Image 1 (cartoon, rainbow, N blue to C red):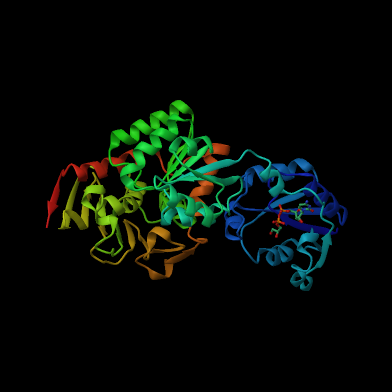
Image 2 (image 1 turned 90 degrees about the vertical axis):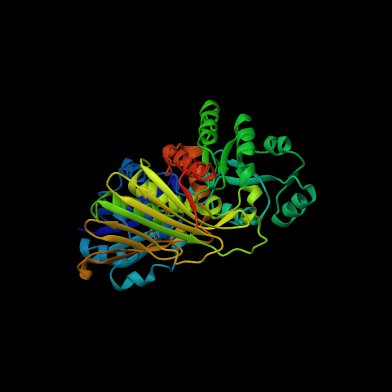
Length: 444
Ligand code: C2G
């Protein structure tokens, strides 16, 4: 019996895929199809896949050509599979011509003609697009634009800044068609907004955008009061729109897997979470302006709050804040949380520097994420018996903003499940509010 194997993502299965599978099957008696996992696609730079791995497997199955379907999850697996399944022919589309010649050492390699004029990318492009208007044209907005280019079905249509000439030069520099002269003009030119303006303006812009029926991706911290966050969510619900904080860490592959890994119990019961984010800042920076929600807590607390809430939940019993002050703002704050069966602490600093790592301690072992843990591609799970220790590596492409943009687009276009829960977002605002109200804040 002649065995043939082929591989692919098979996203939005189309005629090109079907032709390929038919031709591959015709090369022998038994066809094995390897379908890539979502994780493997992300690792090899394909981050726009629309269908998940189960949907893609079902689609391949429905063609009737595959005698067996396997999943492809790592680089180098093709050699292992060829040996494991006793493969005679490896077949793949001609767009890969030459690329898989290294497999000739193991079996025959056949490049089959690719069907012209159709591709998953073209099909994805035909879907409705997310047309984003940017509010605020500072440094984070400049970094957002090249990252958005990596996400299918997303285009930047306009930008707004109250300083019109600044807005114009931003648009010219970044190839954005419309420099909006007012918020109304911006909202008319998009179906979603990305709010990248100073913290204290977030609520007003987000409210205006949601009331105009736009989806909202808002830089962190979203707002500084729980009620404000709750109001924005009820506006979003009423309008049937997405409201998502642009919390980079929550969407990056390494952090997402850390969450699912620890939820599965690898380090036992979590007893402590300790996280630190310190970024020494120029004394004249707006980040230290006491009249404009400056200071370490306002600037950075939402980062360590993420692992604390993900691993211990949001039902803490008490928080004490210890702040070192300068010119009316905290240049450093240590916060200590008491839960029923655990504790947590974080350090944030704009004027004090510390080691920026994340440690999650459990009854069986601990997770160690080295600095800068909030934009990580790597972590370790460590145990008493060091032989059991394991290192985990992930992609973290570019500035990492593409992951949150992709999540925002998927939430709008496909209704994907939010990685950051509403409860977590409300609690983040509540912690910011407690601090601003000076509840259990001790100045040192
Ligand atoms: N294909 C084709 N004609 C098209 C589009 C795709 O013949 N118009 C073929 C591809 O050449 C490939 C298969 O269909 O053989 C699956 O294509 P993709 O889903 O794009 O998967 P790909 O990224 O090519 O993955 O390990 C995975 C493999 O490297 C291939």
